Image 1 (cartoon, rainbow, N blue to C red):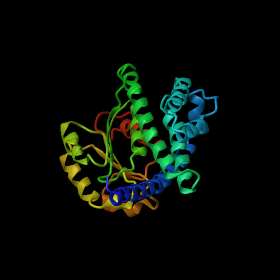
Image 2: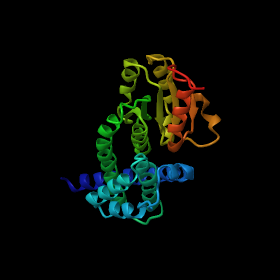
Image 3: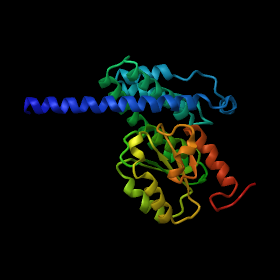
Image 4: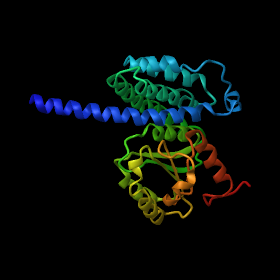
Length: 276
């Protein structure tokens, strides 16, 4: 390869990873705060007593040890037999936040952090593959259907991916759509009733054209009960500033989504039945 071309590619890659690391660092830190704010009663219900191996997983990822990282995640999840979703909220989210701080505070090189992020993607996918059959085998539990989408053109999808796995383990039929595939949202909404469409916005640039898209998605949906929820690192208080998006809910954190959806379902928001 021509030397100048090689240098140009290397410079482009470094610039992209630096921007990615900065944005994910901010997003992950906010997710970590949300995860750490979970009620203590939730952990007691699951019978937790062992420490969460955040530092062990963090170190394994920075050292590029995928097998070790998976072993840590699987062991922790096996110990949480009554709350399998906790592996995402209590272990993965804090580690994502720690990786973000490693980058923003220059404690690790961008190559190491970028590689650690790629391993984290692999872990989320691997855990999800093993979670799906277990979820389907739990008495056919099906609370409803949710689409979790990353805003068009947005590449920051860790929070959205974690949310999907968390909702699936809670009994929701949750489907992930990345920022490069938002054209798939329209046919998904038209194919059948969708209880909620959750949109993750990680950067300010992702707001461009989003309000028009939300309007189109509302018109296309097969069910008029679909709730549109917008969240992500780019959403900051006061949430009233985002009324232009015409969303039903703005600013819900990952650990609030499951409770919100269940509450809405129980009060008949999704047009099926009400327990109120």
